[in-house]
Every structure is written in structure tokens, then in C-alpha cells.
Amino acid sequence: MRLTLKALRANSNMKQSEVAQKLGISTTTWSKWENGKSFPDVAQVKEIEKLFGVAYDDIIFLSQYPI
Image 1 (tube, rainbow, N blue to C red):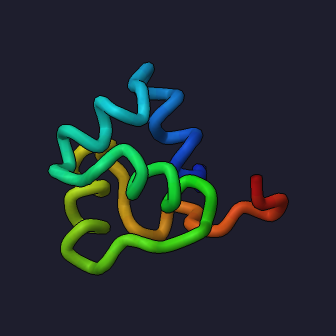
Image 2: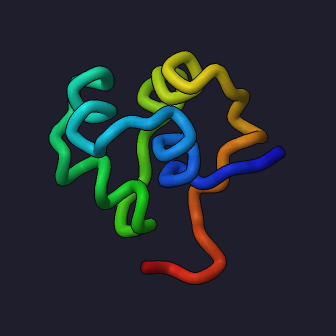
Image 3: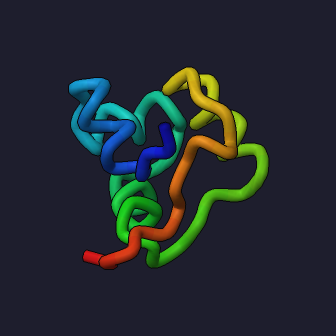
């Protein structure tokens, strides 16, 4: 099942600040990724895959209805 970054975070019962801390980024950066205002680079995507236990193909980076 493919999920957005927001859904991955919510399903893990984590706050934006918690995800940001685990990835070594700012909360603002994570928020921008969730909202499609900017995107992680390849190294950051690998960290997201590890954190949430998903493959790149299972992550939706652009929501159909941007917030």
C-alpha cells in the first residue's frame, strides 16, 4: 500500500518534531516535505525508508490534494 509522508508519520504515532529529530532535519523541513513544498534528496529518502520500514515505491511524495 502506498502512503504519503504524513500518513507514514501518523501511522507510526509520531509528531513532526519526532520524525525530524530522528532524521536529523528541522521540523520545518519535514513539514515542507509533507506538504509538497520541497522534497528530500536521495540520501534522505533512504533514511525515510529505514525509519518507516517502507520502500521508495511505497511512498507518495505529492498528495493529490496539496495542503
